[in-house]
Structures are given as C-alpha cells and as structure tokens.
Image 1 (tube, chains in turn purple, brown):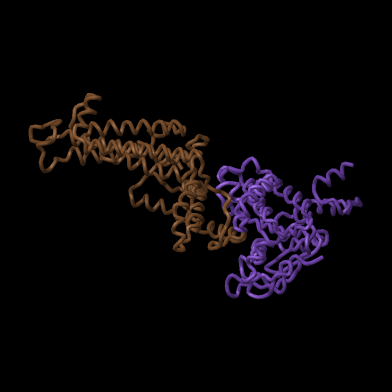
Image 2: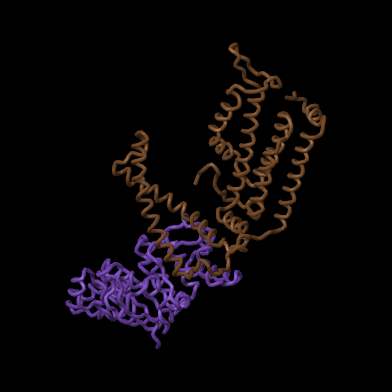
Length: 273
Length: 295
C-alpha cells in the first residue's frame, strides 16, 4: 500500500518563539480512518490546515500521494485533499444548497450538465435532495454540515479531513454525521479519512488514533493500544472511551468482552445475551 | 429583511420566472415612463392613472400583495409632507398671474392649486416607482439579481475588469445578510441581559449603547470572513481563474414576449407624451372625453 500522507519533521509557529507544531513526523496509509484527538490548543486544527496548504510550514515536508505540499503544487493538492470545517455557517458559500454543493465543482470547471447530475447525486447521498433550493438560514446546523460534506464528497478527493465537523451540532446532528461517515467509509474503502475530534467514542471506532499534546505526537496506534494506559491518558486531560471503561471494569470481574465490540449498542447487545 | 422594498414571495408565477435581466430593463423603462411630462395636470393624472392600472395588473400577475404595497407607501409619507411644504405652503415667487388661487388669506398669503397638484403629482410618481420596485424585489431572488448584475457588467471584461469577483463578493454579501442579522439579534439580547438599554436615552447615550452592538458584530464579521476565505480556498477557489457556472440565465419565449409588451408600453406612453406637449387641442380632447377642468 502506498502512503496517502507523509509528514516529515514538520514545524510551525503562529508567533515567534511559540511553536505550535513541534517536529512532527507520521504517515498515513491509503484508505485508513485516522482520528486525531487532543486537548484544546494541542495543534490539531493547525495540523489539518498545514495538510491542506491553508498554512505554510516553517520547516519540514508534507507529501500527499507523493506530491509535495508547496506553492507550485497547490492546485494539485486541492484535488487530492478536502476539508470540512467546524462552523457550519462559515463554510456555506453558495446562496442555496445546490449552489453550495456546486461551488467546488464550478472551481474545477466541470461542465454544467455534469454538475447538475453530481449535485443531485451527492445531495441524495447526504439526504438533502429535498432541500436543494433552500437558503442556509432555513436549515439546521446539522443540515448545513451535511451540505458541506456533500460539497467535499462531490469533488471525489482521495483524502478528506473533518476538522471538528460535529462539535457545533446538537446530539442528533452529531449522530447523523457519524452515521454518514460510517456509510461513506463503507462505500469508499479507498478514501483516506482523518477526523479531528473531541469525541473519544468516535476515536475508539477508527482504525488508528493519534493523540496530540502541546504540538507533539503523544501517542499513535490502534485505539486499544492507545487507550490501554488510562492514567497516562488522563494525565493530559483526556478520558478513555465509555465502552472501554466498562470492558476494563468487567475484566476485573473475569468477564471477557471481545475486541470487536466498540460502541454502546453492540456492548449492550452482548451483555444482554 | 423586511425593508422598504419587500421580500421575495414564494410563488412561481410568470413574473417570477421571467429572466431577471428582462425584469431590470423593464423596470427602468417603466420608471422613465412615470417621469415623462404629460401636458397639463389633468392629463398627467389620467395617464399616470392608466399606468397605475397596468402596474396593478402586473402586480396581480406576480401575486404581489396590494397590502405590502400600501405598507411600503408608509415609508414615503415624510417625503410627501416635505413636498407639501415645498410646493404648496412656501409662497410662490415670480409671476403668479397664470396660477389658480385655491385659498387666499387676508394677509396676502395664498395657496395655489398648482402647488397642491404638483405635490400630488410627484407623490403619485413616487408611488408608481415604489410599486415597480416592489414587483421586482418580491418576484426576483437576490441571487438572480446578482447574476443579472454580472451580465450587465460583462462588457467591462473587455478592459480586464474582474466582473466575476464583484459578483462573487455581492453574492457572498447577500448570503450573509440573514446570518449577520440573526447574530446581531443574539448580541443585542446578550447585551440587554447585561443591562444595556437600546431604547431610551439621548443621542450620546444611544450611540454609546449601539457601540456595544457594533463592536462584537464587527469582530465576529472578521473572524467569519477569515474562516470563509479558508473554506473557499480549500475548495479550490481562485478569483482570477475561469470557473464554470451552475446557474445560468435562460432567455426564453416569455422573455421575448415581455420585452415586446414593454416596448409597446414605452411606445404608447412616449406617443402620449408627444401629443400632450406638441399637438394643439389634444389637451382639450382629453378634457372633453373625461370632462375635467384644465389648469
């Protein structure tokens, strides 16, 4: 498998002497579902912006599909990587749902007929086909976020970043978006997906978790390994997933729960058996 | 956005479906028709009345509510008061021998019919203009107006003027009006709950209380535009690059018909204007038909 993302000795600072990203190196395989977690100010969002070339690194290199992230390649990079931001309002560019989904396609000079088909297809995918003519102020935050996701998916990028895409939504909206993520992952196994989140439960469901702390990679690995030492995780202000807590607690009572079980529904099903 | 010029109504009438470019051109043409001089006052009122009937018919076609028209008239009443003062109440200078006295006071102060009629005439014209604008704004989405605007600017592309940037800016501004309004509302409530009084107080105090609204609004505006530009950038927006367009304006048969109708109207009213001003005896003819006195 080839590397979708390769980061080498990346450093970045907004102000002098205050390093936000301290010499980070990691790589992500094609098709991996990675969650990036960490405390506020740990540099998660900065890292995502560096990956999309919305910020320029002070030193170090980033390669996306082997293409170096730099000024000359910026147009190519936009075709490889897409990002969904936190605030649903501030990334809604078009005046209506269909216009917003079409915005990225317009930039790629997709012909109008093709664009119409794509807009409808991806609106259906995120369940917004009934709202095509609606203006953003008529939609809920979750709906706006779904439109943003349709806009990104329609571009058919190989790498998609969700930068805390669910953190400003109500619980229902969060569930909606998470379901959408799972479906998209199932339909496009090749899609490299990076989710920046505060949601530990989501992290537990991903292929791989990277914990950032103060601009450095604190832990990196499979969720079970990363969350194994709960004291260490708590030390940097994070918690371990609820399901894992239950598992650990039951383990002391000699009840073994299989590793595949990762969300609350599955857990309760298993326990009720 | 309930302002003077109304709000887009959610219907799908023929007027709604017309090409916005045609609508804008028609609006301008009909406005000019409102402002042509049609001879003496009797003629003016009769002809403008005819124009008003036509506009009412268009309003009916576009399902523009008459009530909203009356409501929008509210906004020009102060102008009418102003006009009354200017034209009717201020003593007329110069030759007054040709004017008709309406009321003559004992101290020599007179109000002339001409002054009163002039006021009514101008108000009538303003009302007509307002109704035309109301038709445009309540049957055309702001976005369509932006596209039409971009099209009207397109000749400027020949001199390398970035029209697409202007229209993108405009459409973003329009897109964020409701967002910022609701934000302003929130900030206002938040400040009120902290004891700021927006209603009472004299000018100085009011200005001070409004700053508590403006400053946070501006700050959030800047952070929003920052994030927006990032989002646009991430989705590959390059202002000077060519882009395809999802929305296109389609000039159809109904638009041809509309232009034709407007041309007939313009021709008709221009002829009327010509006759009333240049043909002897035309005034008297109209007066005979309608049986009104001439001033």
